[in-house]
Image (cartoon, rainbow, N blue to C red; front, side):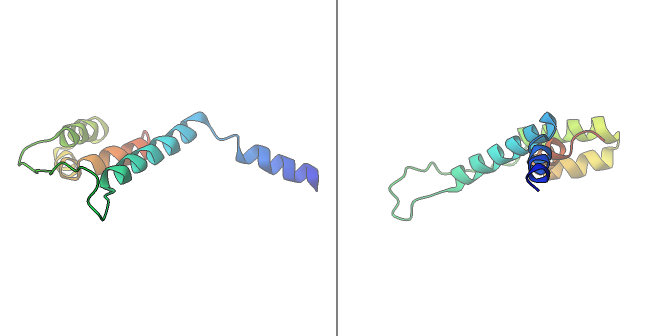
Length: 97
């Protein structure tokens, strides 16, 4: 019984490096996002006001380029450009086609 438990533990902790890297990258992005969203109810922390301006951002550009290189479709590039960073994070998690 102990030998089976040891094999199970060995299989659990020997995932490929790429899978561990993707999980760590996703967790890091989530922590940074949550840290940016955190605020103090008493207003003790300084927070800079956020202004949203119309235009094309970095996330849109990266999403369009990645979408075009994967799909070679203008329609998908437009849709993924609208999604922006969501699509970029999805590609990082899923990987190559």
